[in-house]
Image 1 (tube, rainbow, N blue to C red):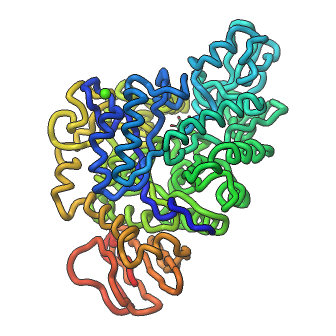
Image 2: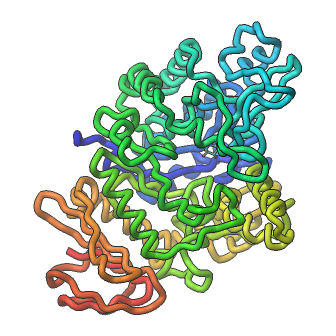
Length: 555
Ligand code: NOJ
Ligand code: CA
């Protein structure tokens, strides 16, 4: 693979609504982000991905864009955005924005024009179809629940893979594709470092628009089967890349669910559509057999998690480059997801960090993950904001759960768990805002906050900094940046271990993913302990006893 700057970059995701509020309206904003750039630089971040800040009615917190050329007033102005790009640049940080081009907001001028009738100028920027016998054109179920079709006053229906306020754009239309390419170039010309590309595998729709086999009592079929990674999508993505990304030295990371491993080369090789993708196989292991219903979590084991992780690493390595992550704004906090309640402590948290951060790929840290922020206790469904959480709660009730059970299970998976305000310090509202925060602040902020952790050499935050140093500024940096990945120590249950090898030099990363000791036998005696999440005597020799949740990096 050709070497690229983003291969040894450390990325950090900001959910702007929840990061830092500069003007007391309870909502995070661009000036808030600017005020925290030093914090990000100190952590060692090179790339910051910010979830959408374009003008939006915020039905899906910005993933519903009404003007691609403007910043939403709740986040600031275009001048603030320009200042953010240049202030970040001074600190060696590139800003990447979210590119949401599978759908727009229903408030976008194109859609408002399309609503004026079947002959409207922008009607074919969207997917309009006739209904069948007074019913929607087919039985596709949207990703956020209910029919994927919404009727308009003239009688036709439009398609929405996500919420009805997020009408899908019609990529079959070359004029639409050109408008989007121009818009992408507008932002890249501003000096943006690139994009995280939203829901991009949905852009091609199966053109027969036929019914799907029903997969639930509602008689509908998951739209996944008709709109995800469909044949022909490559033509659209190749055109997009050639007209935009190829002209800049930018980084693109695609949210690309539904890409089978055998197709990965099209997406992430040197000539792929994107620099890298997020692979969801292991992040969604707790929903593997849930048919999209959060209230029916799939039980999983560490060995299964390990198997999915290894498969993902090997498949991506074969074809190109990947992004590695534990959290994002669509997932609950990793502590809750990956650790039993009693084990959400320093050893378990730092073990998880080590496990993913040294994999092959560009590591992403989600805001607050570096502090070990956990899910927030919620007392009622009314405390949630996220539209899909509300839908999922209803699905739980429909499945016959009691309101208490539905709340408990929905909360455990809720996207709002990642969206509670960032915990800066132990003052009111965790120092996030002087006003009333738009979403509940996790009461844990009294002890879990950035100020306390930055002053403590043994904090989770300090451990993340050590990981960053190891990846970027140590004698091992090339091995972590470019080395190949291979599974190791697979004969031991609940041990997630791997080697990274580069130019004849090899490192072994061992993670004891359980709350008990285990003795492992190494092929070769330890030469050096490069990292250890336990203090005290360094292990040596060939037979080593790993403590509960111990992580070791060995040369
Ligand atoms: C994926 C985004 O990550 C999620 O937050 C959003 O709701 C959907 N795409 C729709 O844009
Ligand atoms: Ca604000």
